[in-house]
Image (tube, rainbow, N blue to C red):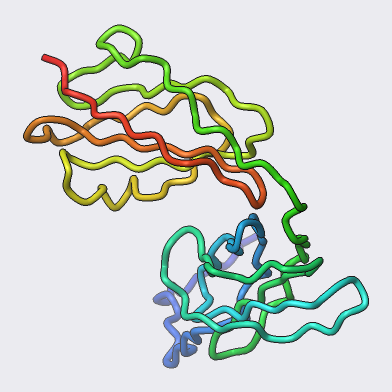
Length: 216
């Protein structure tokens, strides 16, 4: 019995003559998240695709939302609106926008007028600076202070000598911690100027300033 041999034909791989175009699809921004609404400032986390934001306000739970201000996106990690008048119970929310449309509104935060007779936070009590207690080196140090009651966060500033503060350490919100480490700093001519203030709703403390001489 003879079996005819089978012949297989090999073809080159198929290459399509046409390619599908790539479409760049833009979406409305993600929902922003408010993180702060106290002491005349409203703050929220930035949204990557937002080109601007609308801050809205309503008076009391049954009030009507109205646009308070519109600002361009700055590209920073957080966006803020300062000098917000806080004279009554009010709710705030923010909406991120771009060329496609608006995001969902953020979850609202409420504020109230400062209670009468509210006492400002006490200025931070600085633990005396020394090369031992503050770990002072040629390019940094660890500032330390005593915890204060009623405080919700601290703001710090740092700069060389009596010059302007460094941009990354200008009015920096460091949360509710009781020390902060600076490293990799450029050597100042004579000293670093460190400033700190304690904050609680409606009643921030006065600032405390310490001049720190670099270590050897």
